[in-house]
Image 1 (cartoon, rainbow, N blue to C red):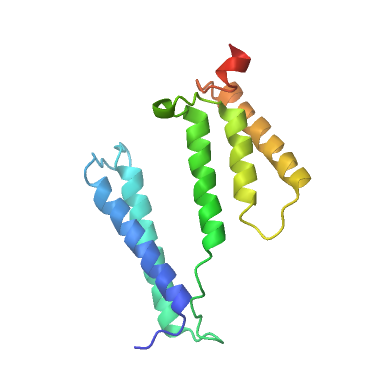
Image 2 (spheres, one colour; image 1 turned 30 degrees about the vertical axis):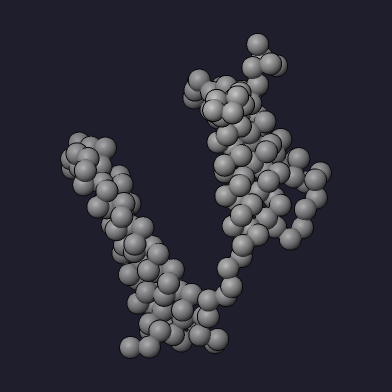
Length: 162
């Protein structure tokens, strides 16, 4: 059988592989049942759903003809780099890096850094728009995690909050 959409087929393969990994990994935990769910129940069900979704996408890629064959394009290295760098910056700034003496900078600064670095992955960068988005995300995160859920997350750097 010939693949009629490469992009869809390999997306289905990715969904199936990740879902299978989650499902296999979930078997290390107590699964339970629908009435008394164990810690492995949700990852197992999520893994099974991803495998089914991946199989459906692969089947569609084998059956449905696309105009250009759904060719896979070149890797987008710039967005990949900046998205990974943004997540690393967020983790380092939120928790600090004691091995080099960098203290935790807190949630607000980590969110601003995450938003600014991740926005560099796109084609258009407007600092004003990025700062507005970062402010909305920071306020929303503060309301959700600190105020509503009462999580013990450092909000500001130690040299500011004491």
